[in-house]
Length: 109
Image 1 (cartoon, one colour):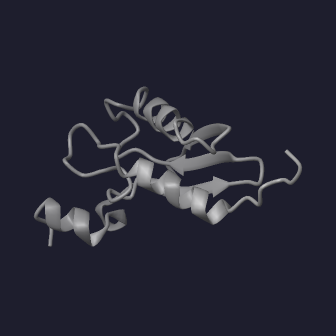
Image 2 (tube, rainbow, N blue to C red):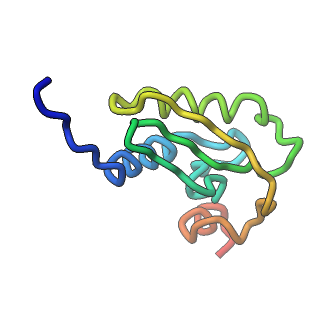
């Protein structure tokens, strides 16, 4: 390659979000992004992503599998070289973090 392709980290971040919107909490018919489980998505110039997320509760039944699913699905994006998922409970998840779309879907609006 004679010229390095300019990296659009924002565009890659948007692709990551689109993938996150395909992952659903198995107990709630809403994707994890609209549920407010994704706190932040970081993308660097090396095409590496880091996702800061939470779970609805620390003893969530998918605590072991959901972060792995997020990591694996994000890694399917062509441009992504690596993905790290970090789980945090600070701040703890609450219904206030849900999008209006998710609240409407669950009859909370």
